[in-house]
Length: 112
Length: 112
Image 1: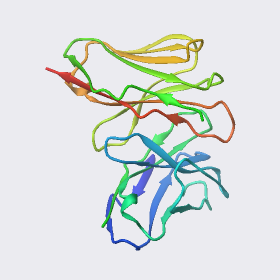
Image 2 (image 1 turned 180 degrees about the vertical axis):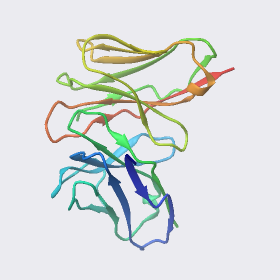
Image 3 (image 1 turned 180 degrees about the horizontal axis):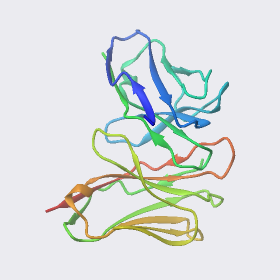
C-alpha cells in the first residue's frame, strides 16, 4: 500500500493564481482531512470529509474549497492565492472518527 | 471551544534521561488519545494511542492517561538524540463525524 500520497511536493504561486493540491489514499478510509501547518506552529484543520459526497469546514476554511467524488481522492482547491496561504499542507485519512490518522508527505506552498 | 493544550517547549534533556511530555484537554467526554512525532520538514507519525485510564507501554515509550484530571502524558525512557522532534497530542471528540483535535506540539531536544 502506498498509504496517503500528495502532489505536488513543492509549488510556488503568484498572488491571484489558483491551483489544486491532490491527495489520494489506498486504504479504503472513509475519513479524509486537509491541514495546514505554518512554521513553528501546530496543525490547523481546513476541511474534512466523512465519506464520498460529504465535506465539512474545519477551523480555517476561508480561501479554500474541496470536493470528494470518490473514496480515494480528496483534492484541495486554492482560488486567488494570497501570501497568507504560504504554508505546508498535509492530507490525512482515517478509518473513522476517533481512529488514528495517517498523514501524507505534505505539499510546501509559497505564494509570492 | 474544545481545546488541547501542550507546553511548546523546547524541552531539553540529556541523552539517557527520561523525557516527560504533557497534554491537557478540555472535553471531559473524550475517549481516545494519540501521540504523534513530527521530525522537522516531515509529516506526523503515530507513536502511541491510549483509550483507558492508566499506563500503556511500548518499548521506550509510555503513555499515561488520567481522565478525571483530563491529562495525558508521554514518557520517553533512555532518550536518544534521534528522539529530538516535535510531539503532537491529539484527542478524539467521541462524536461521529468529527475530527481529532491536535495540540500545538512540544519540541523535544535530546543532547548527546
